[in-house]
Length: 88
Image (cartoon, rainbow, N blue to C red; front, top):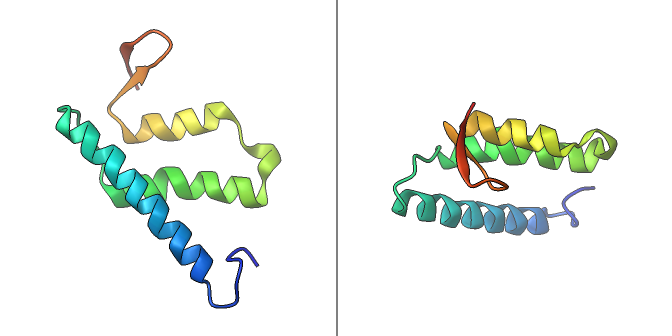
């Protein structure tokens, strides 16, 4: 069982915590004038696939996969190594 308990309370608390952290990240980006995706899109299109891979197919999780998911959500992705915006 993934939830850690029969009632699923641990999973619910973990999900609420993750949601709050993503909300903070998106709010900060918005305050900087960045275009941000919808919270539900971040959860469904970025976090859910990564969590699935971690839980069920850990050997299939690659950094490049996470980068591809991230780029699909953000119109301009910052390459932190060079500090310059890059297009999709």
